[in-house]
Length: 187
Image (cartoon, rainbow, N blue to C red):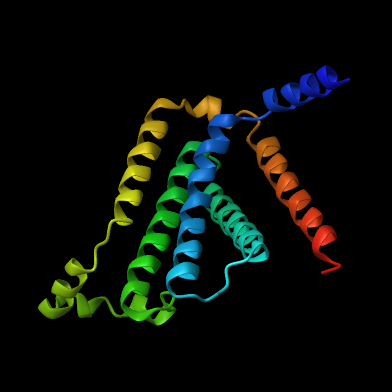
């Protein structure tokens, strides 16, 4: 019986596009890193409990799926370019929010996007340069990993079964949310 279940799980795994899942997951991980960093340093969701982890993971999946869908529309259905655009957007958003929170203990507000002229001030630039931290190396490592994956994965291989892989990812996430709600509804 156990062998049958393992065989069934292996057949399900073969139906997934693991290359697509890996590249998509790096975009989700960018946003998740941002939420976890701000939750632990700024303490927005303190104490950081299991429900906050699921909530943040679910919102990161929603945001990344939205950005990927938007990227698909902008690139006329090119999966590889869409994954690249999604990754760049999530990495920039995550890095900028983490960097901004080091100075202001808050997420980056929309009004800050209109204040690019402040970057001409030398005092602002000096404070930005002193604001870099060891966690910024994490972004550099992920950019290198994503670039390597982007160069080595064929566009046609990324295109196959990407919708079923996204559906599987959403199914797993919704199953976890339902399980969490069911288990913790009494407490």
